[in-house]
Length: 174
DNA sequence: TAAGTGCGTCGTT
DNA sequence: AACGACGCACTTA
Picture 1 (cartoon, helix red, strand yellow):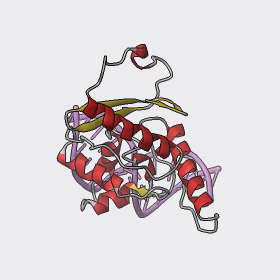
Picture 2 (tube, rainbow, N blue to C red):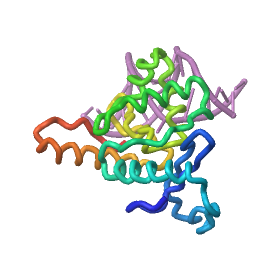
Picture 3 (cartoon, protein in one colour):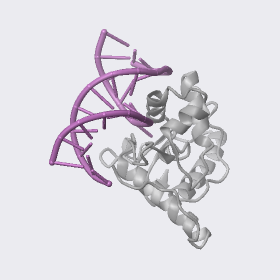
Picture 4 (cartoon, chains in turn purple, yellow, blue):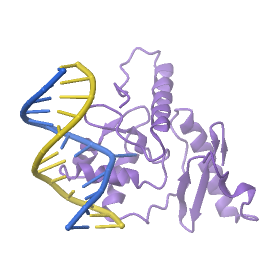
């Protein structure tokens, strides 16, 4: 899946989009060998994924998404991932807040683990979760990506609201 | 303030 | 039984 930020790799199951990988600088994802001719269903989903991802990378609210197949996760993880999807574009949350939202205020650290296990980063916005001290926290795709995504969302919001509203973005970068 | 240490917590492996 | 994309209290510079 080509984007201005490089070639992402999307994976589909019978039920929908089930994986999204950041561009890997090294091995250029299967080196051009993609599936012969995806079935029409998959191609429709892929078109949606493509537009949504490109918008998301620009910091804009994502367009309509294809069905997401998150069935690989445990019950706990699925609850966390759903909570992530409820964080609006341009806003941020914290691992503690997410833990509270899913009704397990003590499972803060486990929430971090679930974020790290998110199979569809960017579209399932785990990058919007910061540490409670308002620092960046971690990111499986690399902290630079997390910074970039947040900065672009903040910029898009600022642009849209003439910058007169307070942006909630991370104070510090580590 | 900033940075480091220790411990509680709890889902995963 | 061990290990974190954490949080919080508490020390030290």
